[in-house]
Amino acid sequence: MRRLFWVTLIVLAAGLVVSCGKKETTTTEGTSSEKRVRIVLITNGTSPFWDPMEVGMRKAAEELGCEAISRRPTTDSPAVQRQIIEEYQAQKVDGIGISVIESDTIGPVIDELMNSGIQVITFDSDAASSKRIAYIGTNNFEAGKAAGEAAKQLLPEGGKVYGFVGNQNAPNARERIAGFKEAVKGTNIVLVDVFDDNKDPAKARANVENVLQAHKDVKMLLGLFSYNGPQIAAAVKEAGVRDKVKILCFDAEPETINHLRRGEIDATVVQKPYEFGYRSVQLLHKIITLGDVQKALEEFEKESGFKVGAENTIDTGVEIITPQNIEEYLQRLESLGIKSS
Image 1 (tube, helix red, strand yellow):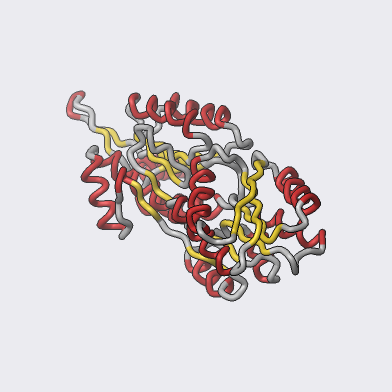
Image 2: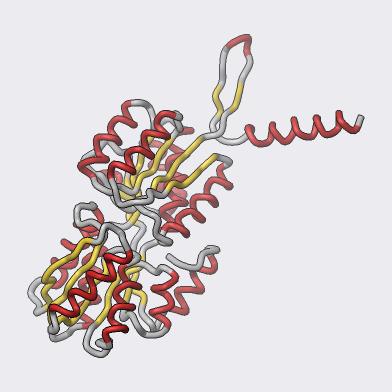
């Protein structure tokens, strides 16, 4: 009897696992079976920036009763990202969200996924010319402009700026650079050069050290990817030139937050990675379960409060965080169950 009790309990538990999500009905002898929707979100790297994204992803999956997992490529390589995508294509998952490392390489892969029946959206970094259904995340051109506006406040008399980024070929990097240049047009602020580091923190630090040694007239260092800010702050502190160089960066990784609290970074443009994860799962789930993209987008817009713009882009927005407002910002993050962004 005791054995029968445990067997029964296991069977009931198994039934609970498969009872949520997408329902697939078979007509054989009038029977039906159910299968959970499977969604995969593939990032463009391993940065702590993706920690809050995964919290949002898990929250949405829990609420919707679907399966959602995240994969982080270990290198800044389109080839590696493609391998991960193809792994899940072979598994025939229902939907994939991708933060695109390089649109020229990954765009055709997205088209293959869509042609095979897997629903695809992009988040954080887009492949606008592909067949992807929608993009969720930052309007990176506008984010670049926001950084440019912050630079004008920090450098009212202008000066030379040097930028640092993982890969200038990444769509989000190109757009941020273009937006920054647009915002400072007509001022004495000049973005002299931008250096790639392939998302290698040691290379990122070395790039900053090289600029500080070779360009004594630098007025601002601009970190365009999330890990760049801490590397810039550490190099500037070691060089003893904090009083001469302004630091502007993106995102609020844990170390960036610590530097802000100590006044070692002047400002950072923060995105909303929690929303990337939550809204990507929410939208993909609607597309998959409704089977109607337009209806899914309409329902998503109504429920989420985020507007679906041209080419199905969904801008989650940015804000500027400084040492003066960092504590208030951290309280808002805590309300979401996250500590960084």
